[in-house]
Length: 247
Ligand code: ADP
Ligand code: MG
Figure: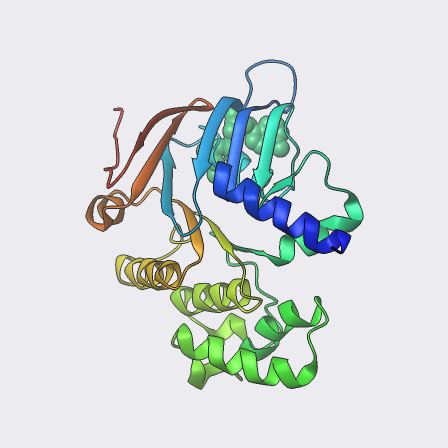
């Protein structure tokens, strides 16, 4: 068997045994003193939808950055899609990230480009053939309800529309995991709900979805798994959970 296939089989087996996201006693310290993440254990299975909640400063974004391999753990092991991120080589990172979609609170779009180009860009960087890009981009824009806006400059769109472009960009390469760090933090309630419904739809089609949020109302009504962090520790992890307010 070819080496590559063997590796793929090993990854698949690891995912079945340990989850598509697996943190084994992970700590992250930025400097001496209190760690931002403190000996966390977390397993997320393929196809799950998980909310991460907790006060500001509790380590949620640090956790997301560890999963993206923007940061490396100080202690313990982080496994994503069967890859041990501590041993992932720099040249392997682009291929690894290709299977991860990510959305942030502040959209991070190319503001002087139109909607189409923002999404097509994600495909160009992974060298998708043009003929496929021309097929995929309109399809994904239709999924997020922006088919008619492909020519608009993103700085002329509303916040809700901008986040839908960001979501389309995150999804166009068909990632197995979507990570969203406070995706509705800058949106009004109506647009927040639209984004969450889209995340739910994407999840129903098989993508594993991890959403950091402060939106108590949405968390309480969506009945998903809720992981609550406090001072770098997971203090609660509930199926069909609720937003836990400490204060
Ligand atoms: P959250 O996303 O839950 O608000 P963060 O993960 O951003 O929390 O931050 C967790 C802790 O780590 C906080 O105490 C924060 O001040 C600290 N921290 C975050 N980023 C850095 C950084 N780049 N350098 C030093 N400390 C940081
Ligand atoms: Mg944060």
